[in-house]
Amino acid sequence: MVKSAEEIKQHLGVLRRRDKRIGEAIIFAGLPEPRVIGPGFPTLIRTIATQQVSTAAGLSIWNKLKRNAGGRVTAPGLLKLGESGLRESGFSGQKARYALGLAEAVAARTLNFKALERADDDSVRATLTAFKGVGTWTADIYLMFGMGRPDVWPVGDLALQVAAQLLHGLDEKPSAKDLMALGEIWRPYRSSVSLLLWRYYGAHMAARSAKTAAKAK
Image (cartoon, rainbow, N blue to C red; front, side, top):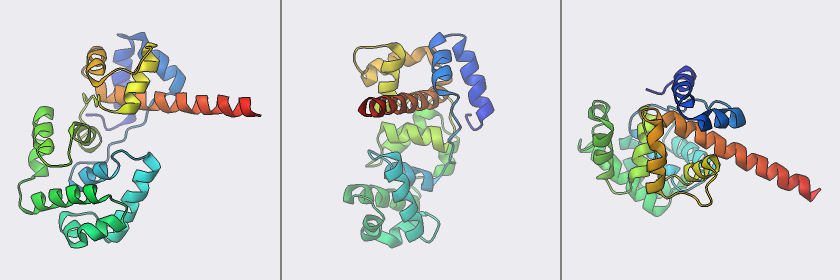
């Protein structure tokens, strides 16, 4: 599991002895913090809300949804809000329909989060991606942040691809297939590496912005 800063530190400590680039990324960006939210319906809906938007925009949508749902996001609450209530919370029409489909599945007991807790990673992915609107990236983010699974590697994530390009000094951003191959050396702690590389990406973007601002003076 990846649920504490100490676990992340231990995982990356093992990997930096295997790959010096991990140590270089830690020196540049620092150790990442854990980001486990907890399993269940609200976390999956939150993951859908944050698809293809900035972190700030995703948080704003999530907070509006919680407020409109009375402070707690549940399947019955979402069904009561309906598509119009979700749209008022900042969901696109498509995302609203995806969220309502998941709420209906929970109500019909065709989506059981307790059963998912006992399933392996591949089974969780297969179960979740069977529902419209839940792709591999969404399932991977749920596995990582919802369930705290230690070896999740969301290769379709753009920031992760750019971070890997920077870390390896590649001329081009690696494809999802290429990133999968690059990540083999970091098994079985790829969740901790993902957290590190997201932090590494953020540190690089901040440094680039600071450099641009300095040149503009």
